[in-house]
Structures are given as C-alpha cells and as structure tokens.
Image (cartoon, rainbow, N blue to C red; front, side, top):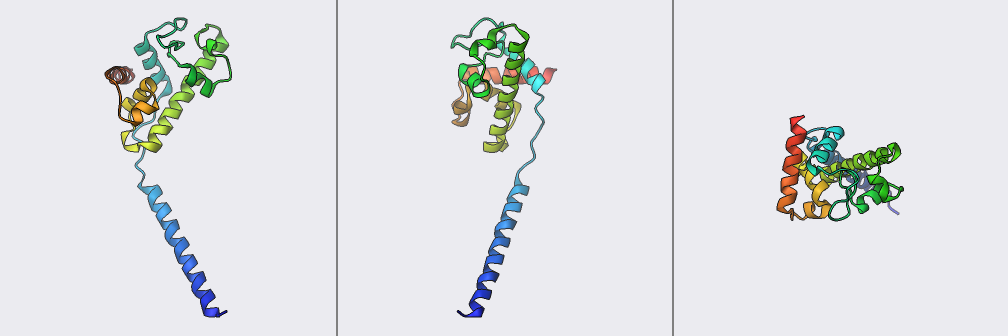
Length: 158
C-alpha cells in the first residue's frame, strides 16, 4: 500500500470528525433558551382550581383526585392501585402529588424537546387537559383551549 494513501485517509478522517463535531456544537448552541421555569406548586394549584372537583368524586371518564388523573397517567408513574388517587390517607395524597409533579415535568420536557418555540404555560396546560396526541396534532377542542386559558390565568394571578 502507498503510505501517501494512509496519510490522506487519516487527514480526511480528522477533517470529517472536526466538521461533524463543529456542527454538533453549533446545533447545541442554536437551541433557544427555555422561556421560563415552571413552578410546579403554582401549576398544581391552578389545575385544582380549574378542575374544581373533590378528590373522592370520579370524573365523567373515570378520572380521579382533585387533579382528575386518568388511569393511564396514573399507571405510567405509579405502581400503586388507581383507587389511591381518590383516597384521603396521607400516603395516598403524597403519591397523587408525586404523580402529578412527574406528569407536569414530563409534559414540560416533551413540549421543550418537540416544540421548543411553543413552550408556554398555555402549552403545558393544554397537554395536561387534552393529552399529547391532541396537542401535537393541533386538534385541541374548545374546552381544551378554555381549560388552558383559565389555568394559565390562575397560575399568573398567584
């Protein structure tokens, strides 16, 4: 083999790696900063006020707790039985709060990664009410929009 060939290969490899590395760094720098930090406690208080449902009364689709959690959301974050979401025992309330906080963090991360320019309180509350599928496909219903606007106003009022 020609030694000159090896040298060209090494130089091309180094140049290629440099270009790829530079593109990665530039792309990472191009990401816009997050517009705000979500205060989970304020968001949870806003959700409870908008839902306006006692913890022990199930919602029309079987949602439970004052946060109106669906069974799917509960099972995603908790190994405890779903009925815990509607009980007044301290350990049940603590688990419910943990699930809601985890879900809000998931929503924040999902919107920030998939739609960073749409990251807002409105988006967070829209996904909480309507689900990721409706939000992602831009098919929010009027009640989803109303919910998100009311929760956003309550969040900002505190």
